Image 1 (cartoon, helix red, strand yellow):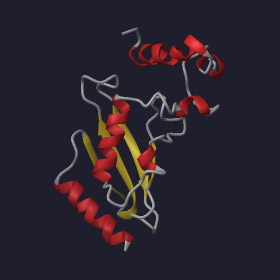
Image 2: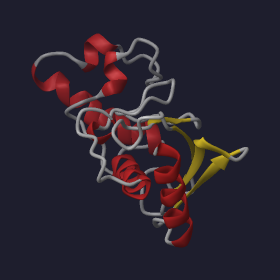
Image 3: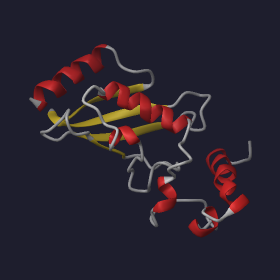
Amino acid sequence: MASKWIQKELKDLQKDPPTSCSAGTVAEDMFHWQATIMRPPDSPYAGGVFLITIHFSPDYPFKPPKVAFRTKVFHPNINSNGSICLDILKEQWSPALTISKMLLSICSLLTDPNLMTLLCLRLPTCSRPTGVSTRRLLGVGPKNMLWVKVVPTYVTGGPH
């Protein structure tokens, strides 16, 4: 059942791709895709092209695909291995979600990070600005706002 479902999604995606996204199989393996996200000029990642791998299980669409960035990206919801902290890729997955909707959600996450999950801070291998420790970023009180100040500076090279 999974292969028919995946094949239908691929056909739909090729017929009507989401804005700034594309996806397709890797070496004609229906269970392994590569997606590309191109960011619009008004985002912090302007001009960026991000490669994402998508692996489907035989239980798809009842289990979410495994999705990860292949392109290194500094983002509070993406760790250094490319793992994405996005609820629809885990506990909020639904068979009603399509790969097209999933890609749009990832695009949205790039533009509007979820500062309540901060995956990047929970993993010791995460790339973060030099000299900023996890302990300092997770400090109590006003220090919690440091992340909000550091991310735009790190991504754009200067404060907003």
